[in-house]
Amino acid sequence: MKEKIAEVLVTREQIREKVKEIGKRISEDYAGKDLILIGVLKGSFIFLADLMREITIPVDMDLIAVSSYGSSTSSSGVVRIIKDIDLDITGKHVLIVEDLVDTGLTLKHLTELFQTRNPLSIKTCTALDKPSRRKVHIDIDYKGIVIPDKFVVGYGLDYAGRYRNLPDVCVLKSYDQ
Ligand code: IMP
Ligand code: MG
Image 1 (cartoon, helix red, strand yellow):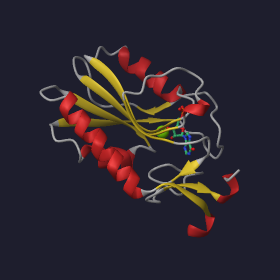
Image 2 (cartoon, helix red, strand yellow):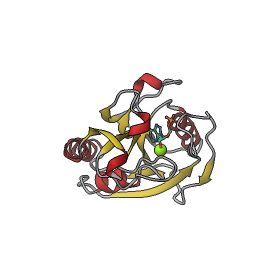
Image 3 (tube, helix red, strand yellow):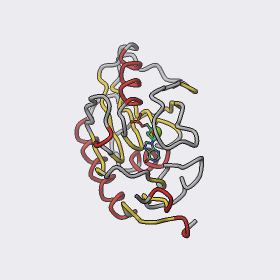
Image 4 (tube, helix red, strand yellow):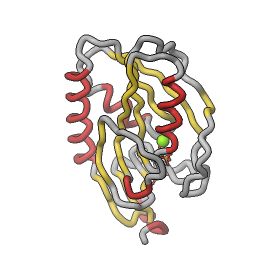
């Protein structure tokens, strides 16, 4: 895989530091509250696993799967639910956990969807933020690392289903503009 990588944009050490910091904040903010973390599949599974282990209060978790870009590297703007969560979030505090916020369409759609189910609160968390490509306004309550407008892989993020297992966030050679 190494020969395909043009640049390491965010190192595993930088990610680990940020995840620790966010986990600590969440633990403080939600102390004594019923919190459900909802990971957005597939991309967020590694971040969710890391983040959960930095949270020191009891939490429940669930997963939702939404349509991805397929093999393309730009958003179609269409968000399709492939697998819904199993838990009832009524009266619970919900924190949506994303790998990367790009256009913001996914997070906006999911926030609106969960809002219809009467949770006590909904907040958002992302490992990476690409603000230059935002199409809709979205509040990110726990923001990881801000990255430039480059297509990235690794730490759960894929290109055509590959490279999710890279421990660092990288730019592929063909996308190094
Ligand atoms: P958004 O709806 O445009 O904010 O982005 C939704 C999802 O697209 C993200 O959660 C990622 O899973 C995926 N995505 C966006 N940018 C990238 C990228 O640079 N690399 C890999 N996946 C991406
Ligand atoms: Mg995602």
